[in-house]
Amino acid sequence: MTFEAAQNPSGDTKSLYGGTSARNRRVTVHDIAAAKRRGEKWPMLTAYDAMTASVFDEAGIPVMLVGDSMGNVHLGYETTVPVTLDEMTILSAAVVRGTKRALVVGDLPFGSYQEGPVQALRSATRLVKDAGVGAVKLEGGERSLPQTELLVQAGIPVMSHLGLTPQSVNTLGYRVQGRGDEAAHRLLHDAKSAQAAGAFAVVLELVPAEVAAEITRSLEIPTIGIGAGPGTDAQVLVYTDMVGLTGGKVPRFTKQYANLRQTLGDAAKAFADEVAGGTFPQEEHTFH
Ligand code: KIV
Image (cartoon, rainbow, N blue to C red):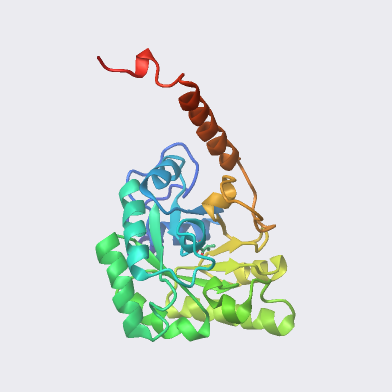
């Protein structure tokens, strides 16, 4: 078997996003490796429920992240820190059920892997067996390498998350990471170490564009940027920011492609006004 065939056992050369004929099977980490070799750019979105996930799946989003951002956007926590493995398992299973094609990646929540590789393997195994995810994501460079190595040895694909790692908000705060030569070198070193440990992709969050582009050029695995400029292989956004559902201030790096908060609010008011005014339901909504 050639190296190319070994990396891509299905022989599938379709692009991850776009093109005329979508694959009728789930995207795998082999497809993602092939996209990097082809120099293809691709999108990733977060998803937290079956219905939204099915919409994104039909739109052709190839990779969906059940991010622990669910803590802020879905569960009403102030940070991602309180998210539990039980919560992650329930929502990841819903996203898997809502999708036919996307690779679903489940985030390992804070406290589910920091104790060491064995705890990480136990937590990741739960997400793979009970929720059915195809890969897991964990935060941290050097400190998470033993976890990455053991998961990969056990057959669980790992997405690494570097730069701003929200689970460390209490030590890092929310600010750009990797500024200055020393910090940039450390980030590059962490990214290369994650690759050496077997990670199939690296999320770079809130990193200067030049640093993210340099890391992208240096790695054989894809980088997925969020607030990391245009030079990464893929881009991810928290979907509620992307569709304008998030209330209050959203980060500058996000782009709002719709205004669903306005649309939902308007629909709720129109319904409420009709109920209050006695104009809903009408004859066509009524059984006799
Ligand atoms: O939890 C999340 O949504 C994430 C993305 C922002 C990468 O980690």
